[in-house]
Image 1 (tube, rainbow, N blue to C red):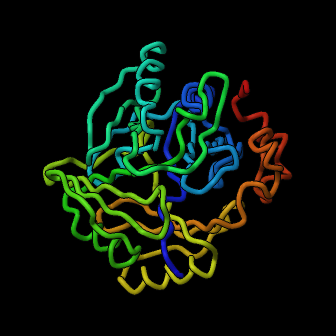
Image 2: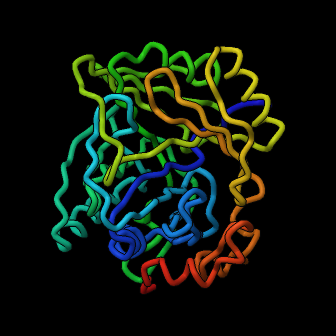
Length: 310
């Protein structure tokens, strides 16, 4: 098919590792699918949170740096991550956040009720009662039952001074179509998948450039089926005169990276081989996994990493 299959994962920057882990697993009810390290900085964790089996389209990842400076949303960044929740479950999350003293805003976008909030590092997230049925299963816990559990990505919002060139990448290369507009917010959708299929472009001509640090998104990864489709997409992007990396093995998927014309770092990632390569599905996230080049350094790396209470 040689096509983009919606969102694969989104990667953000955090501060304290324990605080990040507690918020995403205990407050939001995500599963820690993989606990590994940054390929470029092995003394820093790389956490992957998602649904029970780590499906593409549910995965939010973090680099937690203990003393990272505070970032700032702005133009040339992904500025909000939208998650799908079941219809009628917004009241549950409202009550849950009130009980945990988490501030939030209630509003509506494109006819869908939503609740926006920030994680402890300031990252903006939104949970959305979707109009269309989302058949994915959310992860159930003692406090969060399946009928209210977060299911996976709904949309990601990209803030740009001018959306034209970014929209052309979405429509002419990735196969998205514009389906709606509210003021300076434009919604794009791919028909290749049912969920994690939306990208919202927010056009703000006067917005200052963002600062990519703590509490901001590092990059947005789009999904392809396999390496053949990955390399086909690479040819399409090169044909537009954009610089794109060679294929990179990230252990759980293969990736390409390029910066789209609006300045946002895009990744294209494969479904294969998935997260159950070095752990069983039952044991996902249970122990520290290291890329091959760092396995001989395990003792040193484990000593340098913050201790995590799970």
